[in-house]
Length: 108
Image 1 (cartoon, rainbow, N blue to C red):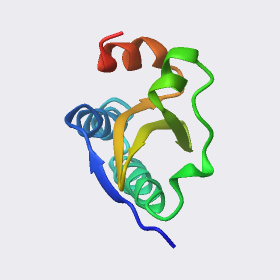
Image 2 (cartoon, rainbow, N blue to C red):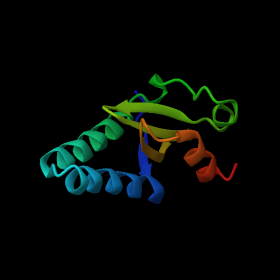
Image 3 (spheres, rainbow, N blue to C red):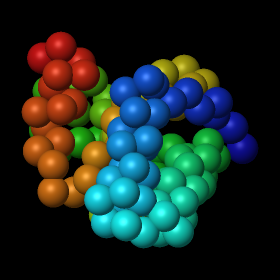
Image 4 (cartoon, rainbow, N blue to C red):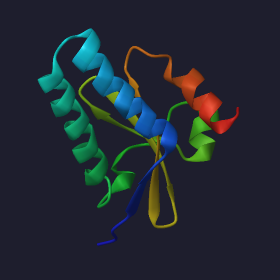
């Protein structure tokens, strides 16, 4: 079985930190914040064995770039596979206009 290396971009790390901060400080639930951040990291790590399990994005431009998406509760984890590495591009809440943030990340 092929095993992929995982790289989390700076944008995705910032997304994860922002999600944790929002839950801890705005929603005043630090325990849920820790659980959410840990859960997202576990979900990301689970991609290393079979990242192709998720389909390409339905948006034509993102599909052509090879963008895939996985879910953890209310969060979408966007990533691409290049050779033996999975690049986590963004981690966004389901209520956010993901396409605008992804287009910006890719300079579209």
